[in-house]
Length: 146
Image 1 (cartoon, one colour):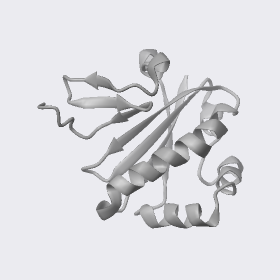
Image 2 (cartoon, one colour):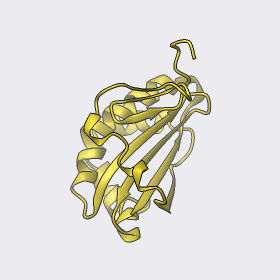
Image 3 (cartoon, one colour):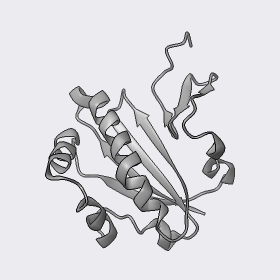
Image 4 (cartoon, helix red, strand yellow):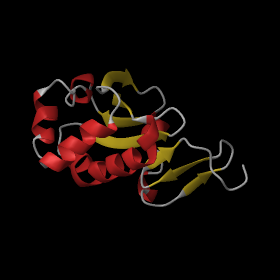
């Protein structure tokens, strides 16, 4: 199994707005689009508010499939063509730099299966003070006393 990893650097003064926008965009467009691609096995979104960074990880069966969504590629452009002009403009405004993209082999398959039956639930991970919300692991410290 392979992971296509996209890292988005966010405007530092608009981090919460960017995370909310990217989460909605993912739910409405990116995730449904990715689910239709050959080899799709799941996804994970990571938000690091302190570093102003959003990381999207999509799992695929093969390396070639994990490379399908390269930001310079045809499929990425096709997906972005589905954005309204307002959405496209807002996305440009919220990003501090062009997306970074990489592919990695999944060496721990249990990570690819992180709570697939509990997407949409808040899953406290008290040891690190992180939590899983709406299928994303929020890397910001949990404010519940940890």
